[in-house]
Structure formats: structure tokens, C-alpha cells
Image (cartoon, rainbow, N blue to C red; front, side):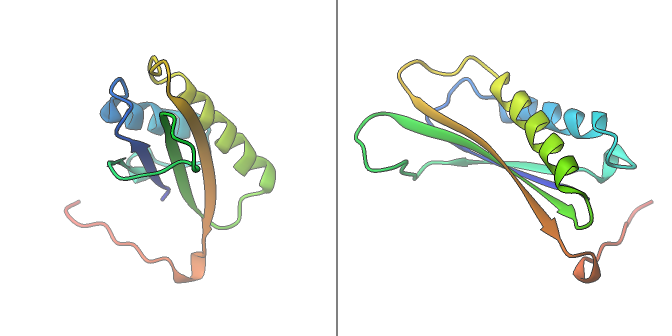
Length: 121
């Protein structure tokens, strides 16, 4: 735990997903909210088919969703959200002429129903 999902539109050629995931993971470690860095699981998905609104102009987005075991305060979740958004803003030079939305969502996973085992240790 946690699970980080990043979706980004394919009209952002300067966004390097490997660098993005490393920086996002580093921000999570720096938060002090997670006991071990190896428990942070992140992935990036490039979205080729998308629409932002109804306008005809060039638009795109980066959406980061962080799923956490339930129990953290709203203040902690807000701090995590703000720190991840700051990382996303600094990831690259964003393309000119693209209306871009950057956003972070924090989701709770119920502890009672979450299961996990480690293999190969």
C-alpha cells in the first residue's frame, strides 16, 4: 500500500512516465506516511482516446489517483494531494497551445476487505 495510478493524454510528448512515477513515489516516501518505500506501487497509462469537454481546441490532462488504506485524516489526505500535484506541475515543459488539466484524487480502500501477501522474500 499505497497504489498510485497516473493517466495522461497522448498529446503530452514531453511527459516521461518513468520519471513521473519515480518522482511521485519519492514524494510519497518523503511524506512519512508509509512505512516502507517498496510497498508503494505505481503505474502510468497513456490515454489515446479521450475528450475534455466539448470544445474543438487542443486539450489534455494528467490525472493521478492515490488509493490508501482507510484511516488517514482529511488533513493528511490534503497534504498528500497537494504534494503530488506540486510534483506533477514540475514534471516537464508542458506543450504550448494545449489546455491542460492536472489533478490528484485520493481514495480510501477499506482495511477490512484489503488482502495482500508477499512472495519471493
